[in-house]
Structures are given as structure tokens and as C-alpha cells.
Length: 99
Image: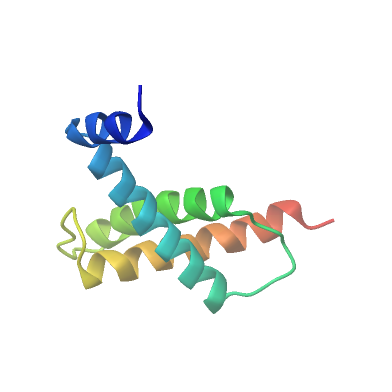
């Protein structure tokens, strides 16, 4: 099977573009959080994406808990919440991994 045909079939699945969008959103949130809070920890691309995605969930939950209307999707309030959650996760990571 040709790689182009495989790629087209994967992108035709309804959840694949959403997963890629979440991963890219998480990567952006993780990178911005890392720029805001630079440090010596060496987070690779995968861990940066995971911190960003988990930060998006944490930030969205905290924003909703505080009464802000955070919608799913790409919007500025969601991005700010994701970056805020990612910064919190980076701070927790520093506390846990400190030797």
C-alpha cells in the first residue's frame, strides 16, 4: 500500500484530524508555558505535548470552576487556560523532580 493512500484513509477517519488538532494545540500550549517558565528540565517534544494537553484539561477545568465559559475548540480563552494549566504542571514537575 502506498503511503499517500494510507494517509488519505487515515485522514478520512472522523477522529484523526481532531486528535492531530489536540496534539498541535497541546504542543503550542506546552511550548508557550516552557517559554514563560524556562528551566533546566529537559522535556522532549512528546512530554511537551503531553504537558500541554494535560495543562489544557487542567486549565479548562479550573477556568470552568471559576465561572468562565470555556468552550471546546481553538479560542483565546481556551489557549490562555491551557497555557496556565501547563505552567502549573511545569511547576509541579519541578517540585516532584527536584533532587
